[in-house]
Image 1 (cartoon, rainbow, N blue to C red):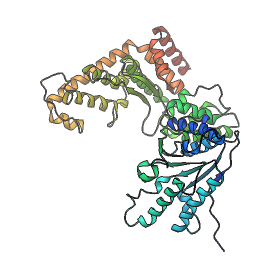
Image 2 (image 1 turned 60 degrees about the vertical axis):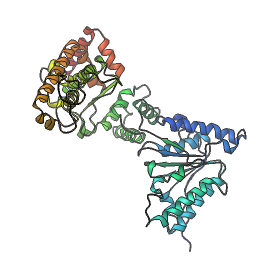
Image 3 (image 1 turned 30 degrees about the vertical axis):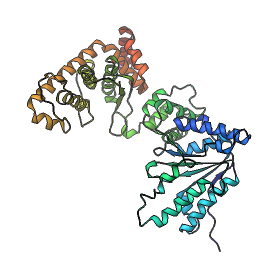
Length: 464
């Protein structure tokens, strides 16, 4: 009795209400632009306005896990109103006994099904599992060469594949055989990057559907920075579970509760200190014009308690630029001293700590960039542990200490001059968990009295 026949996942043209269209997706970047162009061209091909030879027929999508490669293929099929056939090397290997001949038959069968259902989209997931023939090695070439050859034959359409758009997805495009991505095959190579904060807000809105319609998702998206579309889907799913368990509608607090796992949540008695610290960094980065895109968040992620993120402006490295960046690095500690009256250990730690960043800037400035306090200093290669560099050069250590002290004094003066605004930023940060550049800048430009009253109201509530 023959073994049961393996079958790819064949999805008939989906109804518009069943699946998202490509137009609905966020965070797809260039892939979305390419896909919408394909959808438009395919409609013209179906209506016999253009010929198949004028169509884009293949694409290699690459990006990290969870960035939405499979979601993209499904959404494109929905927008095009065509059948999606989803397969992979793992699927081919499961065909019958999984011998080489079976795998080759499975490849040909999937292309045949796609041709039968044309116009259609054939989606091949994890194609980087099939190594480049250059990487396969002599021992394995008897297996991989015929597989790559079969794919090339089907992509070239010797037997005809008109009406079939082939999309292959992978995490590591450099592992894909170069012949597969040549002209006429998977010749559009497009990366799906991790979504931006704006993209994450759109992705959250999509998965939330009709829930929390009036909610501002900006702060939540900021807190989720670095996550993927798949992470967002799970985040909303887990938050809905919390709401169901409490027998009520979904609330923003449910989503934050998932985002801030209980084990990683910043303790309540530390919140004010952390918020003041991050407010100092954020305010200094804007006031000293170090960046035009400053955001800050109180959501703890892994070993990072909280963070203020900014992309430094692209500019020539001068002594003033270095001094400004050192002051920003030390402004968190300065804010604690000025506003709270004492400092925590939050500025210290390992290589990525505030003090380490400021020290590294001072060492490079004096030892490598020629921007130290003395022009007579001999320049040296400044890579390596700072303590080792400074131990070898006592005169450099004195210069670095003086630069750091000057930067800290400047940070303290800056915080004192904007104490009310920085306190208000800290209050808002505790309440909202995250702030955008525009929100931080608004506090800094507000009258000093307004900021001070905001801080007092917060403190009265916390005492009550």
